[in-house]
Amino acid sequence: MPNSSSISHFLLLALADTRQLQLLHFCLLLGISLAALLGNGLIISAVACGHHLHTPMFFFLLNLALTDLGLIYTIVPKAMHNSLWDTTTISYTGCAAQVFLTVFFISAEYFLLTIMCYDRYVSICKPLHYGTLLGSRACAHMAAAAWASAFLNSLMHTANTFSLPLCHGNALGQFFCEIPQILKLSCSKSYLREFGLIAFSACLVCGCLAFIFFSYVQIFRAVLRIPSEQGRHKAFSTCLPHLAVVSLFVSAVIFAHLKPLSISSPSLDLSVSVLYSVVSPGLNPLIYSLRNQELKGTLRKIMTVSFQKQ
Image 1 (spheres, helix red, strand yellow):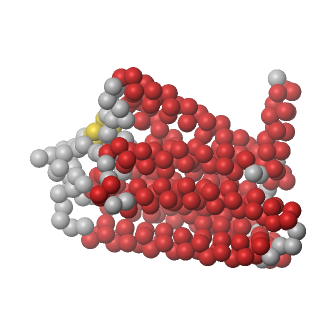
Image 2 (image 1 turned 60 degrees about the horizontal axis):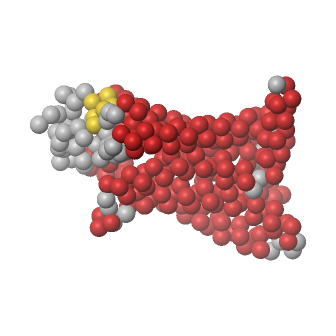
Image 3 (image 1 turned 180 degrees about the vertical axis):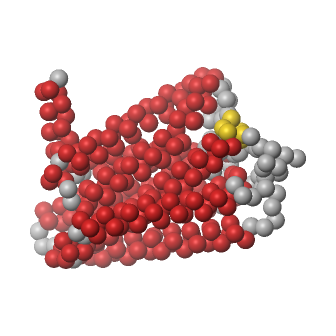
């Protein structure tokens, strides 16, 4: 049996068996990646160019757009290449890089969504302290902490995963390199380090989820106490997009990795992984722009100016 030192590449799961479906998947992935590039690019441009959008909420939204682009363009280009050229291979180094970047961007997105929840909590429940608690320096520190924590988390998981000996072949049951699939190839009996890392990450995830849940309980209580209907509508319009993004992203990730084995199947696993790694980041710009009038207004101005210059 091959060991990790003799493995030069991995075999990814094909998205489809027939050539027609492979080309269809290529076109779908191309459309999603271009739509994500356009949507997130517009959000980044709007926040960067619109001075009235230089607020904590839009600063964190800009960071979230960067993680969405990073996640999609870590996974999608290789899947498109494999679908177009009818291949399933990825190099050992490329797989390690993909694992690192995937965990990095997923972790960063999760931490940023938690910080954005705190931003909404302070804005609605403690509006008088908003400038103090979420000043420009505090926002920069929180964003830096999210990116640094994601980097360390990704580095630890990637280093540990690829330090294990692999002796059960090189075929992965996923269309991109994923840690659980690589661990299935390991012949090591020592899972203590990985179990410790998983337990640490699980505690971190549960802590963030608990914070988000209790924050939204306080937010909804505060919103329901607002006397005017217009005020309640404005408060809900800033919270619902974030809540929708969190629900879609977190539920897909949790279901992908914690679903019962009795309902597990290759097609279901593939569909769920596409949902959280490709579809969710691609939909985020649409979800945020639909109910945010300030963002839509700035985007209209940018597009109007660009058309006038042409």
